[in-house]
Length: 532
Length: 78
Image (cartoon, rainbow over all chains, first blue to last red):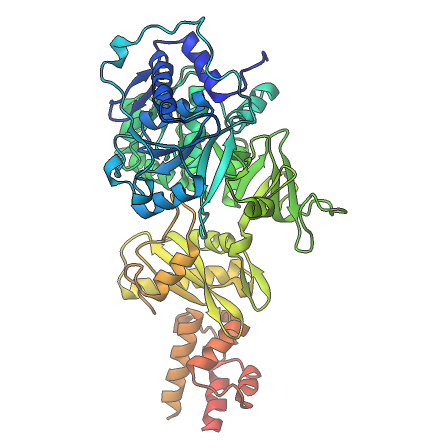
């Protein structure tokens, strides 16, 4: 493999040299189209505007995202100057954006056109910071000169370890942390796959891809940047679309990345319409627990799938479970994949620390997963204490509980921090959810903690049924769920209370927000709660 | 009196164990452990039946884990 450029921008510039007329980015409604030549020219122009506001290498720039082409253009403009793009969802409340500004002290703000918040609506604390609306000129295509291949490259003075972007994460609870990601985060894993000749996730040069994931989500940003670096036609936006299938078919999309809830939506649309997406060859998915039946359905249409596991802190994917013999059975059992070559993994048992402590025990077969990936974050911005807690000598503590089985795959059991301790026994919440979701008549299920003076905690279970139920049917469903737990679960993990709810609160990627669920059920506000 | 007590126990057992009366395969003699009674659900049932946890009654009930056994013990205690 020839030596590839060491920054994201350099790699996108390389594509612009090879295919200046090819479309790089387009919003799913057909607007904001940018060809590769235009993309780099507009990035240069926007970088000049930022430079005029004293933005330079290492400066932070808030990118108020609408998930469209202007958002990705903004990231590349920051990269041109060596500035760090701080990704902020344009739909967030003004106060939250203000808090993100407080944490990152930006020198400028770029506002994408379809953000709910405009330059005039920014919080007062940010009023003194120059804000630039980002627009793609409608005549960009006609006015752009072909890229001069002899012109200076994107940012040759920077390297793989230089920071490119920040993503905010608060997990399912807690204070927001700004995850600082280097250029290498966005190509280390694809480079490994290419070098090793593995087809776990594949990119085809110039292929059309679609991401409905937010650009402020590690999966969304990672996927679009990896595809731009391969000369892909990237369709973005439409995260609230009524039909994923239509977007995929209208744009003849070959690959897409989804979270499991969107995968379920796509499957439901395909079933209702009795249709397929003939152009589609690959679906990547991750972010929360996958539903095996959905993956099976997609694969039956001839599409390859790849479950990816990772966090913002591990620079997106560190483990992968692609289509393979027996892969559906593994997903049913809770598998999330196995590490890419070159990615270190370590399971810390209940008595052990991380892999870096003196005299660390060998990796356990069950425990908290630590990952050492070339895509791992640089750290949390301006938060050395939290960085030290999570990242040690290049290893990241995921906080997730996994089991490594003899097949070499890792099976998720929940979050260490979400572990419910009942009568001194640790209960992995994902495992409790998985058992309920196997019951006929259950569409979604999630457990939560009920504080209890005697046992410390009891397990509650919230269930969304597949169909509307009257009180008698609800009672029967609960009996059916309870009977399943008696067969499948250890005694202490069996829910003491089962409630029917209309909604289960989840993060954007589909992870259950268990504290919010407990509060909602407790306050009887999570929709219609039927006790019985 | 006994029938009302039995109905009360049965309702509590069905509620806490999420079972239907038809699942009492041996009728009121069914061992409640076969229907998922464990330490967590035992405590929940004691609370639901208003049993004094400091008394000897819980241990007597724990030694007779069936509807008929509990009717007998609770009747004695009243």
